[in-house]
Length: 274
Image (tube, rainbow, N blue to C red; front, side, top):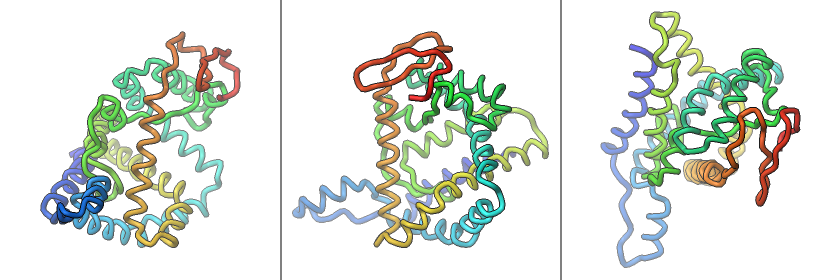
């Protein structure tokens, strides 16, 4: 089976573990403040989530963090940046598909131009030339798409390997994988090796980029699990609001747009990033 099947099983196992591992006990109804806090936290599977977090934290301590530190020590920053850019460029088809599903044609145009410019002038995506030419990157995934469609986030989940999430984003993770052309292109051991290598490099890249932040949280937070839960939700809500508030007019794809709170201006492709 392809690596995508294994990754889907990881997500499914998280949901099953949550449903079988016990739920948080709601506070008594005669304590309205506690009830309100319980609803705001929206983590009914907290006991199971904390077990998964503890397992993930152990794996991170033994494997992921040392690997990220070695990667940072051995690989110069410009090379790491190039690797990140290539991985981002490979994710462009999924990003473009979600731009379209979100009803954001201007974002879809930016994504298209980023792929064309970075794949050619940027040497297969090693250099983010498009950003300097007025086409900055943005986040677009099926979790954000469903949020813009009005679907609620659902309960908080801590997924094995993937970390903080919620029910909406867990479903989005599977759909993003299904949308990825690399999921369906080719067969055989070489293709599977490349698929897993890309998956591993994405994880290593993300872990290295957040190495210091995660270390700080684990050192200073009284309850790292609750801190990661809160930060994840804040981060996702910011990305959703950024997509929702991007109401730039549709113009020819080869002209970048500059965004300001009240106006939209047009500039040639050599203009700086806004």
